Image (cartoon, rainbow over all chains, first blue to last red; front, top):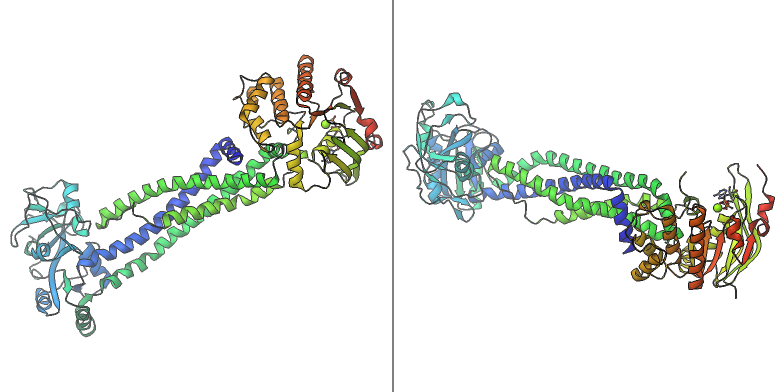
Length: 401
Length: 227
Ligand SMILES: Nc1ncnc2c1ncn2[C@@H]1O[C@H](COP(=O)(O)OP(=O)(O)OP(=O)(O)O)[C@@H](O)[C@H]1O
Ligand SMILES: [Mg+2]
């Protein structure tokens, strides 16, 4: 009780340094928690997004690029696949479902993906979840200049059924490269929290025949999304396309392919994590320095307390508690900071990839990191506490002259 | 039995030049329960040091200090702290109020290391010293005389058996000083606390039934080399 009163007053007397040190600890805590949670959730959700598909067939090239392009609508397509290759694959007994996609156009920066209607009617948006339209819409008809728009795009561009748009050539928006063809929006997808939310879907033939596209490759597709009947089928096709063949790439299993992505990005979150640790160390140092410095001004107060009968250990404990309180206060701020960082990061990831992170999902690091930092703060209090502990009484009772 | 019994108490300090300077050398001193004694002596004769030794804030080099049945010279430091909190109320020349705490809190803090904080008693003591309307003031918001009275209330809050007062009125004007001194003596008498008060004000000294001069008591003060 009395300990708490002592600590509260002392913190208030050094309010500025209390707040600044707490903020620096908050920064460390917020960063640490965010880095951890983003890393873990990104891995889990990215890998989870592929759940509706087992493999991707594409031009010879890097599997990761192929998967990012075909499933996440990121990066450039590594090349084309002849329509006959799609037909061969799709008629293979071990393939449950194969859907071709074609890319190469955008509308105001949002990618346009050509595909067949059975993507919506036969495939799943996410494991166990079908594609659904917002009421009042319908799927496009293959062979017509019609489009189904992902929820995120529709919301951003304010598109609704009946609206029309003219696509632009290329994956990146360039106002000079508008096509002549005009498309009618027939439906808006319900949000699925998958990359499908971020694209405009049009019939495969539409994209292939877009005015100005090369006639030689008119029937080519960019990639084929594949659902297999069994894991053995994956091995067979891996053998067929990757080992025996040399024209195409069969990206399978998807989890392994995506793991490469995180291995490649690993350095990035390692750097961030390192930064967070460094910030934590600096923050702990500033806890130490600010309390230590305040002690010279408090020598007399400490001596008075001792003269009133306070034991050394109480003085020691009050300093440790003070450091701990600063850290605990910092951790309250850290949770706030975490919410802000996560809100921003998940918005960016969502806009860039369509993958939705849940900033409010429970993660043990949300408790472990703050606890660790509170302990660190308490440890930072040890040196000043020792100094306070050994503060001589009689010499410090007189006012400083 | 005496409340305070001192025998052959010696204390030296090391000077900045490395020599040992004897500051206190008191062969014998006694104080009975409830007794009021004035202690005089020129500056530098070791008055403050003597009080600090009795309070256990300093430890002597040799000798005994028997305070209320306990030997302050052999107690462990934590026990000495506890004994001080229980038995002694100390009024410092410079008051030594905690600046970050209100009047009431200063008194309560003084109590909390002893028998325990008692709001009602703290409040009534502050009323008794005339600060009933200043409970939530911080020391810097009080006049010197008022600060001194807070220090008095704090020292007496635990109903200590011994009140040590180190020139408690040295910073006050004569009227204030006289009032304050009367208050201290009155409160000590009411509570049955013994009082050992340092002063070199002849008027103050004259009002005490028993007066001691540290120049006589303290053999070390005689050996001190003049500067
Ligand atoms: N920590 C210390 N180290 C060295 N010498 C000290 C120390 N504390 C006190 N002294 C010396 O002890 C002597 C007595 O000091 P003390 O403060 O007890 O005197 P005093 O009688 O209270 O004087 P005053 O009336 O001025 O308050 C002085 O000569 C002082 O220099
Ligand atoms: Mg003195």
